[in-house]
Length: 330
View 1 (spheres, rainbow, N blue to C red):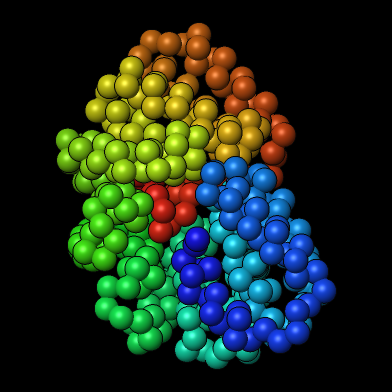
View 2 (cartoon, one colour):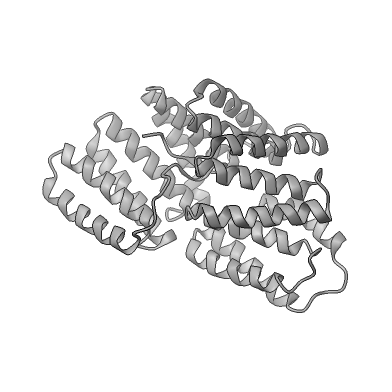
């Protein structure tokens, strides 16, 4: 179950009165959407959560299932890099939580954190920092020290600092989050694997490639057994490792990682998603450096076909989800 579901479930029960029409269908769709997300089937999760959001539009304006479902769909949009749509949902959820539970509640803080995450990936860094710091202040006030929800927001803030090239601040926060998560959740928890990946990206950006490679492997050893190969987290991790191998001129290793990443993204997002096209171009550029010009031309042709299908989409290319995985800066 997601952090959002865990933190807000009791609030939903407290706010609910008579069961609204469509509640059973909403429950089914919400559960299916979470299952699809967990498996990495992002297209199915999007379709399911969109139907769930439509049902909640008929619920009372004070029914928190509306805000919760909007936040879940916003996370899916974020993975797909549909930042405008994600931010719009987060803002609507934020307004509802402020009216129903107040501006110092866990729901309001979660909506702030999610909106801050979207702004971060959208490269609206000043707005992102404002939202994340406001969210952090609320959680530090209402939750125990080192609570996983609080450390998740700290991780998002560290990711923001990384994307702004504030590497020392980012590294310090990531180390604090890693220590807290290991203490609270354990050394093999998914949160630990995600933080190890994030720390690897910082080492890579600083030219500490051996340290980065070791951290990526540790992250993979935690994430892959739990999520499987064709999951967004693994797709991003392979993408990160491919760029590291290009950086150190290990092109054969980079090619294997690009192949794995592209295959995973095709499963998660579809073969014609812009992210697949962008990775095909990166893979082609790496092949050209290693003498694979013919294969590179074939990949570039396919990338152009994908770009033709998505003329208005320009990806940020940063990450799938700030508190999940970061991609190294290019």
